[in-house]
Image (tube, rainbow, N blue to C red):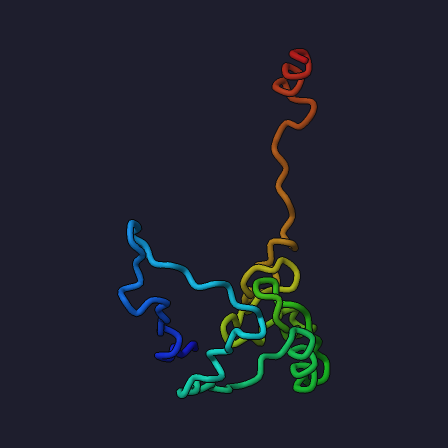
Length: 147
């Protein structure tokens, strides 16, 4: 939050008589100041900005350490697939739940899709269906002749 003081907006005039030289329609600019003469207007400001200090922002490594302390036996931590925050992995059912308040993604550890009710619903465990025909079909032979 930035606070503006009246001192920030004060303009010093070089000439008290209007500041305009004869024959021109602009004011004279003041000569450049040396760095030693520049004032820190934030320190001279009478009003102080109120800073709300909330919970400290933790780094990703610190968040993993904090979540690791709360971890029950038989579980582990991994990065959430959506937000990279720590996620608790339940090994016995291969399920992970993100610990971030804003995410809370509950997902399957095999396919990373939202959690399934049954293990058989996971797309990784389902067998692939092959297209009929294959390399011995008429269509495939026709395409090979075209090459």
